[in-house]
Image 1: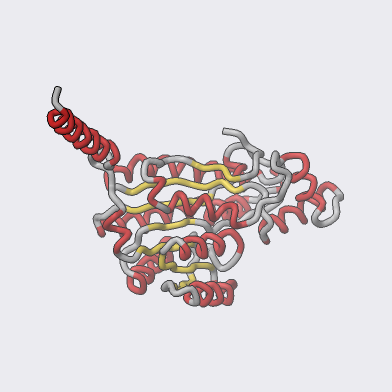
Image 2: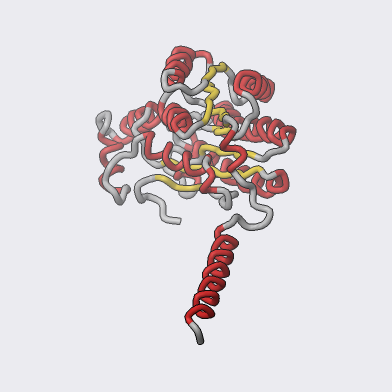
Length: 298
């Protein structure tokens, strides 16, 4: 074989390899590409985001390139305003809106405000929630009703109002909800809170099935023991029941339950939400991702 013919054969072989490599690296047929959506500005609503985990999520998504609508109840209006200002100082757009997620009409107004101020809605983070420490046989109907109004109806209202808007836009999007490790294994004295978070897992799976045809991805995140105002309250109330001083319950749970031996911080959760809200989770739906340092193993 002449050297000239050998060079031609090697050239053709190289072109074939490059062609196959290019085809193997391209997205599977029917996958929703993010190249186009990354060109235009993206927006997200984060409920319960004036402080704690919600605020950390809002700040992280702004860092990721989202414009953010900050939401909370009227009692937390100062936190809404300060978080909006903090995001705006980074160069991203932000707006605030007071709404009670347990009321569908207010959530619909929240979505309308976000779209008016920030454009098409890409991601809804249904983060708002409440907790209460109380023995099962001491619970009242009102205790149970209020827990489910905020933690379950609130997530349903956010998912449904956002989904309708995203479907109308026609370009797909993401719905994310706040579950908890107690959505996998309840804690004593947190029974109705635990039940409400089990319901969030169920709603998330159901929405994932029904929204798939609209290219809407639906997932939840399940924080563990996090150093926030909510866990300060849980620590205090559990301490009263067991005779422990403030801070001792969280310390005990951290040492005995968490494999990594440290209490979580809100940024641990916001990193996971960043993944779920970003392009790398395009083939993940209907899941509740645990971020607890090793308490629950799924």
